[in-house]
Image (cartoon, rainbow, N blue to C red; front, side, top):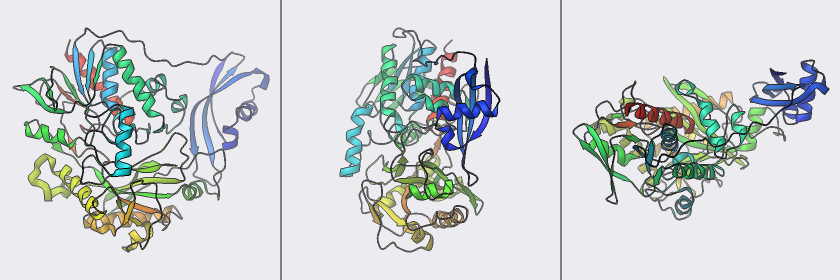
Amino acid sequence: MKKEFHLQVSPEVAGSYSMLAGTVSKKFKIPAKEIRHVEVLRKSIDARKKDVRIDLKVLVYSNEDYETIVINKPEYKDVSNREEIVIVGAGPAGLFAALKCIELGKKPIILERGKDVQARRRDLKAINIHHFVNQDSNYCFGEGGAGTYSDGKLYTRSKKRGDVKEILNLLVGFGAGRQILIDAHPHIGTNKLPAIISSIREFIIEHGGKVLFNSRVSEILLSGKQVKGVKTRNGNIINATKLLLATGHSARDIFELLHRQGIEIEAKPFAIGVRVEHPQSLIDSIQYHCPERGPYLPPAPYNIVRQVGGRGVYSFCMCPGGVIAPCATSPGEVVTNGWSPSKRDQPTANSGIVLELRLDDFKEFEKMGPLAAMEFQRSIEQTAWREGGRSQKVPAQRLVDFVKGKLSQDLPDTSYMPGVTSVELRSVFPGFIHQNLKHGFKLFGKSMKGYLTNDAVVHAPESRTSSPVRIPRDKGTFEHISIRGLYPCGEGAGYAGGIVSAAIDGMKSAEKCVAAMK
């Protein structure tokens, strides 16, 4: 017999199978000799009280043998000679759209402006060490998109949009650990994602699809209001009547291309702020209410939201045991982001702390029309580049100094590899952003005792939280509202935020596209 139970245990019990099995036997009055296996189905941490507990959902096999369920790669047919669908972008939206195309019997052709995951490493080293930004290969562009080398968080609130479990099962089939099916906030890690992404690409090619790197789209070919194909910067023309646009939130050249070609887009609010780094041990002590974390708890995250002047100030993409990375996509700008390896074993924790923006915040750039929010975003990144010393060194300030409006006399070493420059960050941001962030940090300090400390360092800016542009599409068909055959999807189109939601949106867009071909 198999039966599910919910229980709450100490971290030590959750970390020991024998102790967990004994607890299950005692709590639910099941004789120990009858328990063949206890399978953990769901796991989350409850740190609201001083005594930290682990919430578990378990499946108990009583007098019934347990067989390990193996999740393999999907079994799809070859699509080499089937109808083609062109996909622009090999991030999560593009890759999972390609998998769905193959599943539904269509041949995906992926055009990726950047390089494969291995070749990208050299360009990441160039930006970290030499401050050189390759506009086609960086932390945002290249195989796997921004998520490949910037963390791999899989938590999403977009469960109404599609089947989260389908995405997680596919990732496990391609090499992710089964733990992502169990943890309430699953995470793969930047050190493990590249191999998974490579496995997906090889699968697509093995089943008849194509993946073309170094293929930046320079023009969408149209016949009236109908897609006819794309032209790449190297002069290649790929004919297509169905085009999935999955370029990611940093593809400014694509937004400019669409606007120039008269393809309707619109400005979209986003959030902007800073990335703050604390010692991980400090965050552990705050969150777990103890001097030391101990061996049975993971490095602690935090999630915090406060209202300041009618706007949300909140943590974004929090990375326990992680580092801050340079994520500029063009020379002459500075952008920060954060990531963690799979073990989250770095000595520092970092998080974006951002302020929600509104469309009327971009009035200074209203002459740019639908590109106004993008230009607002770019102007702050360029200011940060100048203030940081016209390099990838990031303008930075100790946290208490930031709140007090005081230039930091010195800065500790941080995980941001290109280096930091002491700057009073009011020179980077418009006044209303600076003031709201300061007030937000004060509120954070009241609710998280010890958070507001000069041992923490603020790095500016955190500006790529989401796309500053939305590409409008029909709610029912997912097709662009005026261009037939064009299917905008994922983060870049303004319909997702993160790996899982982008993957879901890519798959649903592919489904809609294939349905329209019948």
